[in-house]
Image (cartoon, rainbow, N blue to C red; front, side, top):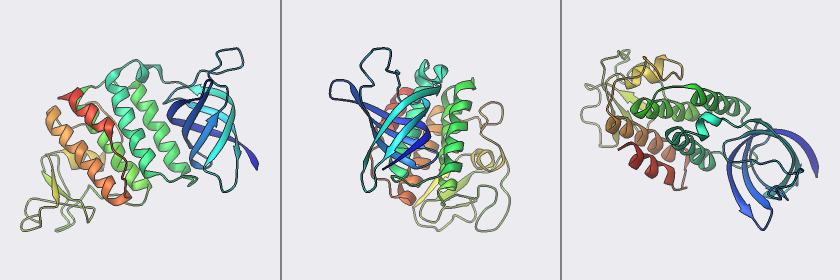
Length: 255
């Protein structure tokens, strides 16, 4: 057994017995970990109140060949109050966390992806946009995760003719190939492609994860369709079998 100091994002937290929590943690050092925090819900001075979405530091007792580890000595680095206090932002965060629970395997380190998710939470904490713009911000982040896990998409040019996409260009994503094509190049292709409205590919391929002034002007329904496409793409390429209940919730919330 080894004892490691870890920095983690709490992907999920569920009560266990009278005073403990079962946690899924996305750590910078070890990837996704399943851990138990014993006595964390005692409510005395020794306990630290932790919840889903917190960025924490802690000690982890890594047990070789075991799926459940022991986490102790918690220190909260950031609890993201603006996310926790806003239902739209919480719903967006939960979609991403559900995807992470399905996409990242246990004890598979991804330090750059950890930093990417941490940056997403900081931006989500501070952005002011709502509705469809928030959904596009989430979709761009999901495609960014795909890139970190080796199945990224080049949203800048058509994979058929090589022409660069402009802000006015509608494109189609071929799910199984991970390629985007313009209207001319998609003709005759089997019905495994998904439409991305004008400006979407241009936004995904040319801007950092911003949520204001640079996002396409889509309806909530159109933005929800783009989110479904992003989730479908990651399900296919990362073999995610977990149900995305958070997507069903966010669809009702933004409809």
